[in-house]
Image 1 (cartoon, one colour):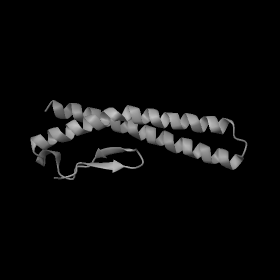
Image 2 (cartoon, helix red, strand yellow):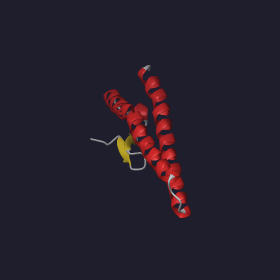
Image 3 (cartoon, rainbow, N blue to C red):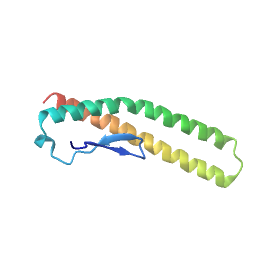
Image 4 (cartoon, rainbow, N blue to C red):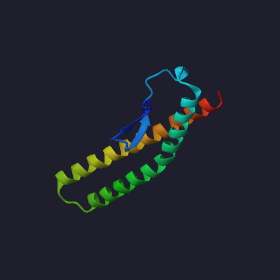
Length: 105
């Protein structure tokens, strides 16, 4: 059996990875991929909430930090985490449209 999803360590979720042209896949496989993706996609808002909590903790630490180098590190970590959140939202929205298009064809 082929693997159609890969774990993205940065995002913390499985993301689609289909090496074959979509039209070349059997319709049952297409449906299985879409079902699995919808399950993964449904978990994205929870993953974002987890990351937002991490940002809030780091912001709290930043507000109480006096060491400049530690402040810089915390700012960088906050920015990196915010970037992950942004990418998760992109996956959530882009593939929502893809799933809707596929289900109507």
